[in-house]
Length: 164
Image 1 (spheres, rainbow, N blue to C red):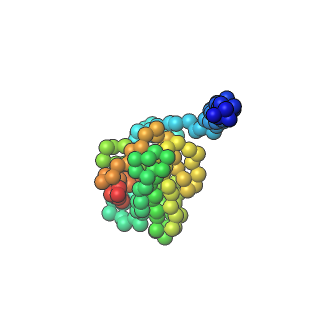
Image 2: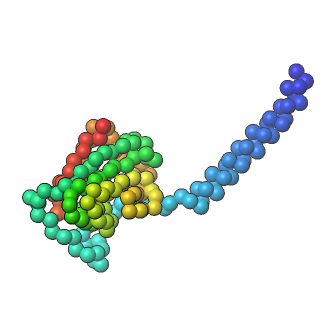
Image 3: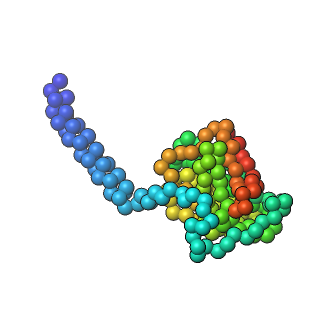
């Protein structure tokens, strides 16, 4: 019994110091590395007068672009949609958008997919790269059983995917 009484203050100090150090590290990391969360802008062609006009795409033309998967539905940090292009020439995705049945819309920035190219669209915030784009939302949006559409700048649906 006496041994337990001797160790109790040390155990409590250890717990307090561990919690304080962990809290300090998480606070520092949050302030240093967290990306700014910017909600996706609504589709508005007149919003940016300096943006180059989107190329007119024949609505009857077959474009080999697909939404290959939507994974992590319901978990913000894991949610992402994978868009793959299997055509033989380059595909300019500028002005294209992903949308769901609830009218959540992600508008693609200036981006070109090359033959056999793919891009992942993450729901959360992050730093865009050539293969990873970040929506910048604070809540997950994809739901099981929901249909996701890939729409060209003229409003033609080019691909759909049912979230598992």
